[in-house]
Image 1 (cartoon, rainbow, N blue to C red):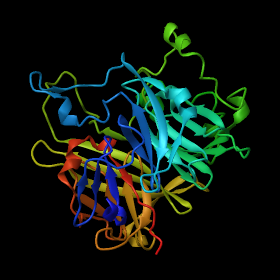
Image 2 (cartoon, one colour):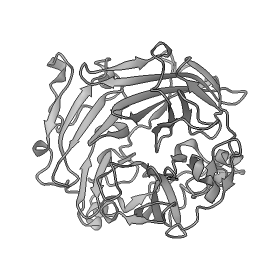
Image 3 (cartoon, rainbow, N blue to C red):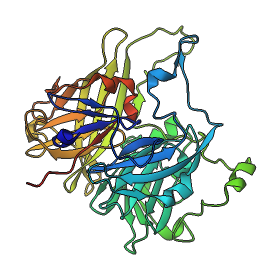
Length: 419
């Protein structure tokens, strides 16, 4: 695989690899992995993967291998079946592996329905690592090798990104939270601020009974700038959230919702439902529309990309609309990035996936300046921020990417070669 270092990779959950480029290729296994039963969860940074050593094969089993012809359905993850997990960071280019026992202590014995969605290194693998999950009780987990863990629950964060030392999270309502981390080397949060508020004030009231948890001392309804914050002391009695009690205590107490699939966090992509939907009217199959939201760090700026795609009854899926915004925390709003503004920064391109998104320098014939690419098992288009148009990509995808659900695909950027 030495020749693939100049290409951007898409890594599948079973640790097979698709490379981008006009000569895109497929490799069925990354060499030098730290075990046989390894699942790729996400890219964690440039050149680094987050891996899960587990006998839970659900995530790394190709989707069509779970299809049952007799019933015409796919096998689903089971909330009543739990597995043991050992998490680690691995650099396939250097061969270095960094175990994450602190994360094992929090979510090392979980149901098949539990998902780690994103793993983000703030800088080096021995620094703070942020993990997002699909479980409300463990919405964001911060850990650092040898320094412990810190858990942030019930915040509805569907995507996250580091900009410098600050971790940002976006909710389903496109509200932006800024998590300020402590300076003592431990993975704790000293302050959280809602820097962009949902412009639809009744969003959460309209669609659910959910409210901001008490840990967010948020008086933003009375604030002119729509922002609120809370201090770490209001949230926890210590440097870590107390969630590492004996496992049997969780299993034996029916009043404690352990990680069993209950209390799910919404995905960053959701289906668009018509407001005039009537349950009394017979179902009529129609084209389906989905909107995904991605946070991307671009230098010292934070971008929100809103990707709208259509899944027609006949024909392949396609992108219908892409919108890019910059976070202006000084005024508490998302500012559109338009073609009139020149699109992205000079020489920049965006790569989006649920598990890892990145702004990178355009290079060669394949990665073009100003384009937004998305990891997908079927979409073959990209958005040009310079013209505001959707166009076909210049490179070829290996067909094996279609074997997996797009939510499991992750970009991996090989480290820059120094000549």
